[in-house]
Image (cartoon, rainbow, N blue to C red):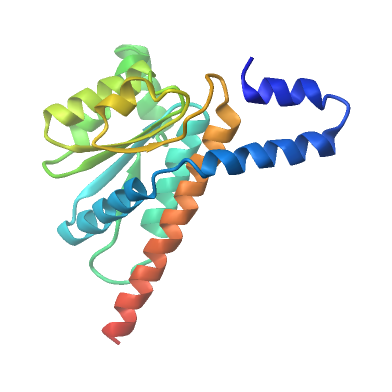
Length: 209
């Protein structure tokens, strides 16, 4: 039984008690994060901006939504207003492309086939997967690494294959099946990193005003 199952069972007739316990558990998970890896991810994004390179985001289910949110917050949320935007693209957003690949080639090809079309030398891939074992994510990561791309992995549970293959690893250590806390913290990464990038862009703009 994982921690979330344990808490729901304990507080099944006490929603407020469950909420307090869930939030305390989430806080304990946050305390285990390696902030050095967050710094490396931020540095990667800033360097990609300087070089005009693209950062691709991928994931399934809730992680697909996180990929979309991340790409939005980094590319549009920063609104640089100059000729050096953050080029962040989610490969989870084009339903026609995704269904065409899934139908014609198989679901496992959904992201790798898009990378074959769009990825250029020097680009990066951010792979988001709670389990770290989604076949279509791993296929894309393998392709990206073969092309010399940097891979950032956002994982949970024990990290799976994705954690092992990632050059930069933002990992949340939990018991298997604890999707809620893992996906919660992945979104915290988004807003934490996005707010830092916005502040950096504003500071640069102030220096050049």
